[in-house]
Length: 531
Image 1 (cartoon, rainbow, N blue to C red):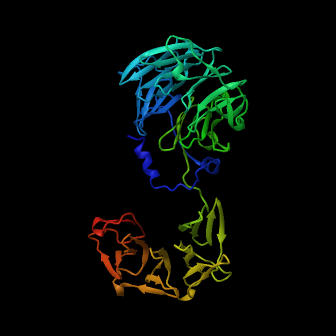
Image 2 (tube, rainbow, N blue to C red):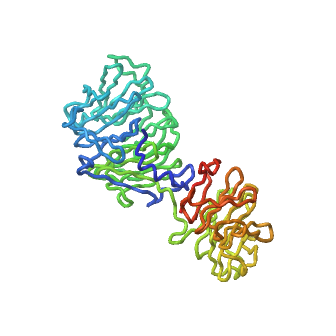
Image 3 (cartoon, helix red, strand yellow):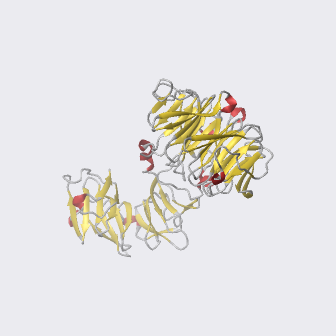
């Protein structure tokens, strides 16, 4: 089971317009879609979500101050004192899943617990005081699980036994495992490393000093190796003791106790959650250190963030103090011409995109810069572009309805569209299509036209077409053309022979768009149509 099949359905219809380094390019203010969930019947049992993890089966597990919650994207299932799962406390502040699908749970004052196949095993760590709650959990390459409390108690659970050490100074910040297998411990203002293979039960902890810092806030493991260190009000990435990247000062200022949580997204970009009295929401960085801030001004329900979890679909889940749960999605589309009607789009092999816009000139968008492309002055005054097409030889064609008549146009070397036919004598044209041989086809209100370099050779109802008003053209791998018409249904052009497909096999009378998805014969219905 993957997470949230109902949510993922919308993504299958979307086109992502960003590049590989999408954080800096796409995450301007407002470039997010944010959904929020609060407390209530059938929802969260409490408004403070302090821990989030996604387990291998796709469920999202949430820690609240009124129980642990499993979320499948639609339903919240609460585990508290009324359930068979008897946790030490309902105040859940940390959740972690290990490689064996066990859940490790940290509570506010009642210590930690291991959940294995529905059985709860209380652990002798972090009991009795609020400063003893778990602040960090990780698993090393040997399968041992490490647990660190706020008051500096460090635990290592292996083979059913837990060893405990007291860190000095007694202020736990982070325990992480890097990609090379080293354990890094942040306690007070010290960073220490441990080689898991060197650790023995009931023996002193063999530590090595890490990089020197003056004021440590957080350590975050990196998917590409090394770790992120938030210390001395700066963001740096380390490999061992060596600084690999320096993103500079905190963009949220230097207020104490503001950094609450950090992680990487699935592309390896750093995400930091800030909370408390000086919380400023989420800061999502790209590979170069540019960041987007996600906060109450662009839809987050609170700026006090305590939990972060990227899921398997690329969404970011945010847990907040007193304001519940939010899901953050980068918007998949950017608006190139707000308030206009785009009637067709066609990409070229340079990464650009041609767009025909109703009652305006054509738009060419490349590298995030959009510009209007005009026709020869006065020839296409008051132009109404209906379609644009880049053919297989990268020539740009267009059909449009100017002030008088309609016509087929070609982009010239001078960067202007020029008429390929006499504008005043042509039928209205609505669709362009280039076949496998780069033959150009035009759908008009008077039939299907094929461009021969000088004129359109027309196929009409006299040639067997079911209707003359053609709105859609597609081609399968066998070379057959499929033609969608207004009120005449679907046609197939096979070896210069037109076959009309009746309503007994295709229900829509008007075919407005078509796209070929398979090479099956028509009896297998290899064509998808949208009315």
